[in-house]
Amino acid sequence: MTASVPAPTARRGLTKRAIDKKAVVPWLFLTPGLLLALVFKFWPMAKGIWLSFFDVRPFLGDKWIGLENYTRVLTDHRFQDAIGHTLILGMGQAVGAIVLGLALALLLEGQARSLKLLRTAVFLPAVTATAVVGELWRLMYYPTSDGLLNSGLHFLGLGTVQFLDNPNIALYSTMVMGIWIWAPYNMVIFLAGLAGVDRSLYEAAAMDGVSLWQRLRYVTLPAIRPALMIVLTLATIRGLRVFTEVYVLTGGGPAGSTDVWMTRAYTLGFTRNDIGGASAASVVLLCVTLLLTVTVNHLRKRGEAR
Image (cartoon, rainbow, N blue to C red; front, side, top):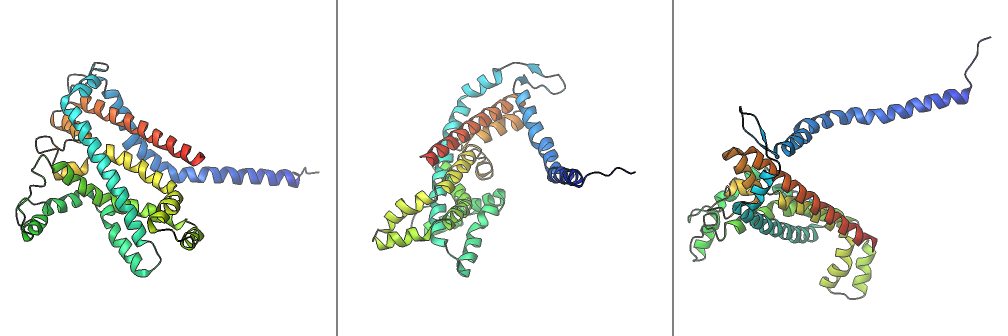
């Protein structure tokens, strides 16, 4: 007599194999991306942390110096100036892009076809390469009457402004370009938040006769708080890691007036060939970014718990 496997046991075996297959298949799709991230992101990151403790000397052998690179970076007056520039530029871009992005979202909210086309056009700066955008703004900031902005000032009877060559305004000129780039990105996130607002709240507010400002303050902003916290977190990270806008427009000049932390680290590593110091500066930036991100997320969760 041939023994047969009971039907329930066979079904359990088939179910287990199906579950195992379902668990493995997603990882097969994720594996190429994880390998790329490991090779081009996490391994270089670990290598950078390791090199930050060494005096990197090509062909001579690296020399262990402990925390000396960190001490040198944090006491360097140029890095200290770069901290101030980074904070001013980062906070200015974050606040400006959030305010302008929210305003655009409120203006362009709706399902009309014309609004969809307009939203697409407005979003273009966010998906255009920053280097390309920077070159366009360099042309607009051209320091003669032939430049776009200066020609407008000349038409109004005003003098030519050296937007990128004046140390007093170069940082703020860079800030304007950053706001122009990131406001459309914030707009999309705010539009997603506005789509989830209960329309009955607007109807109740209209029946109560509240003003537009009161409706924005007491209805719209509380309803889109999750989207606002996401934008704030991303803006914080972007503000600390700002590089391309400055590098393309001014390269940190004139006279270091727009030098931010990332451009300072870049100069240290690729111009002065101080790989250890540049690695230490990058690690400091990584730690500060992680700390601020965790802080913002903690504040967000505490606000949601109230």
